[in-house]
Length: 134
Image 1 (cartoon, rainbow, N blue to C red):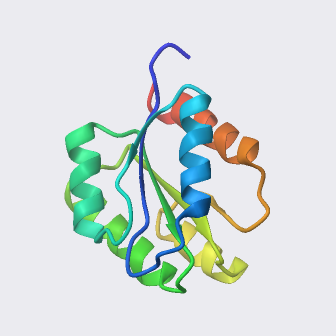
Image 2: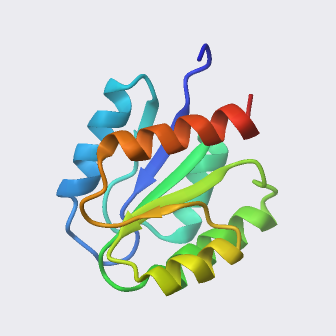
């Protein structure tokens, strides 16, 4: 892939557990992606604005607080309002399968739970960008 994939990564809400997203950010960077890590306590507005400013291909969120339905839905709504229709919204956390399915129906990409290999997430992002952005 010639163009570097630009990924905005964030921990929205009050969730302070950031070890996992930091590991993913490093792995994404090591795989050749350009990572813009926004850090902790990001609002949906801050995340979407950063994606716009950075011309992101992907927004990746880590949510362990249980607020995944609200946060992913709000980020997707703001993405639609700002015409970010060709940007992947993905992420992970402790998200029940039924919630993953409901979010997918709203336009959120594949979500990953605990124990997912880093390679699986990288392959998903690379394939999505190859199909939808290049």
